[in-house]
Length: 288
Image (cartoon, rainbow, N blue to C red; front, side, top):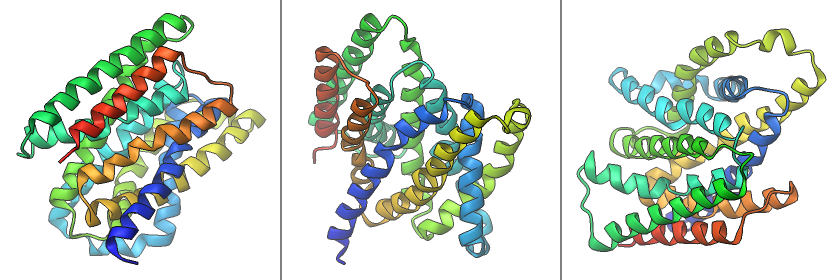
C-alpha cells in the first residue's frame, strides 16, 4: 500500500480506537478510582507490549532513552491519569471534544519550542478554537450544575502533553520503529504505574465483582486503545507530519459522540455550536 493511502487508513483506524477510549474510561470508573484506572491502563499495556516486542528494547541507542522517557511521560503517563480524573466530573463526549485541541496545541508548541512558522490564518484558527472551547465549557457548566467543569482544565493539559509528545517523536525518534518506541515507553512507565497502584486500595478490593468487571474495560483500553493504537500513531507521525497525525482528533469526537448517545449523554445546542467552532479553529490552524 502506498504511503499516501496508508496514512489515511491508519488515521481512520485510530479515530475508531481512540474515539471508543472515552466510553471505556467511563465504564472503567464504575468500580475503579482514577489512579487505579490510569495505572492499570499502563500496566496492562506494558505487559502486552513487553510480551510481543521485548527484543525491540535492545535496538534503542543509549542516548535515545532520555527521549523515550520524555515521550512516555507526555504521551501516555500524565494523560492517562488526567483523563481518568477529569471524567469523574465531565461527560466522555465533552472530554473527547476538548481533546480535539491537540493539533492546535501541536502548532503552538511547534512554533514556540521547535521553531515552526506561524501564518495569519493559523493565528486566527487558534483564536477561533479558544472561543469554541470557552463556549463548550461555560455553557456546559451552566446546564450541568452537578458536574464540575473546572475538571476540563485537566483535559486541556493532557492535550498539551500530547502535542509535546508528537513534536518530540518527530524531531528526535523518527529513526526508530514505531513498535520500538512504544515498547520503550511502556517499559519506562511500568514501574511508576505499579508504585502509584500500590498506594491505592486496589489489592484489597480486587476480588469485588464490580472492580473485576471494570478491569475488563481497562484491559481493552490499555492493550488496544493505548498499546496497539500508539504503534499505529507513531507510524503515522513518521510517514506524515505532526499536524496530520494529530488531525485524528477531528474524527475522535464523532466516534465518542455516537458512544455517548448510546450511553445517554447529550450536549446542549450551544455546546454543539462550540464543538463545531473548535473544529473550525483546528482546521484553520492547520491549513497550509
